Amino acid sequence: MKKIVLLTSILCVSTPLFAIQIEQRDLSSNNNAVGNVPATQQSTQFWELHQQIQQLQTQIRQLRGQIEEQDNQIDQLNNDLKNRYTDLDQRLEILNQKIDPDTDTETAQDGEAASTEQNPSQTPSSQNTTTSTAGAQNTQLDEAAYNMAYEAYKQGGAAKAIAPMENFIKNHPNSPYVSHAYYWLGEFNLSLTPPNYNQAKDNFAIVAGNYPQSNKAPSALYRLSEIAKNIDKDTPKAREYYLRLIQKYPDSNDAKTARTSINL
Image (cartoon, rainbow, N blue to C red; front, top):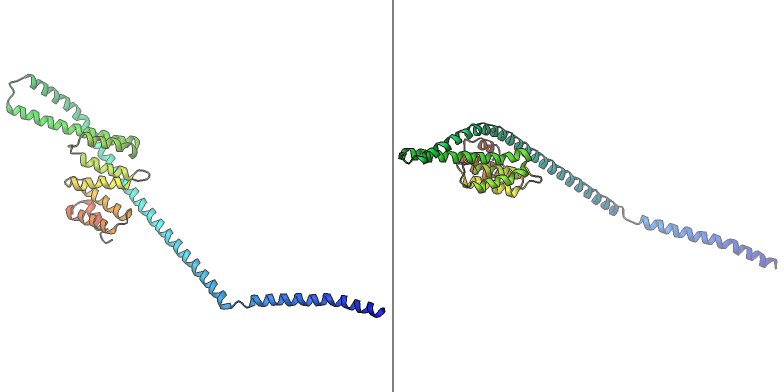
């Protein structure tokens, strides 16, 4: 009986020891499985990840550079617009000074025309003089209407000035100021938020194509070239406008500026 009890005790003690050996053997086999991954494969994965990170960093730097370049171009366009508006304000003041005294002249001329109508014995030369006076009056009225259209810009900004300027063109299609009106419509569309580049291009193209003798034609061509270069990113088109500007208006200030940009 004592032998049986002793044998049972030995078996109970040896069973946990055997289980511990099995667990140790399993853990050892798992560690060996992890260690069996080739070191070269791990290095390749790390290298590919490093390459991807470098590519992303390069793309980010390129995007930042493009954003900075576009910001500079926008600042340049805004500064150019401000300079042109300042120049226009100065010209507008001169126009106001010219128009005010002419109003009295128009009244006097209207009185002369009325007295002539009452006198049927006027000579042909006096009739020609009256016709010439009427033409001068029409020009002055056109000038006053143009001035009023631009006054809307001074009072309410570009967005408020577009409709009055379009109405001026509609009501005075033969006015000598129509080319100027189209040009400033282009400038107004550029200064909107956001800018209406397509409409601005249409306005400038009308000036350059339909009114080549206008003193705004060189500026319109320059504007078209700048939009093609900075907004549309169309280098061949920009070069075409620059060359056209230099060839047709070689002595203009815009042509001088274009010569510095011709090597795009």
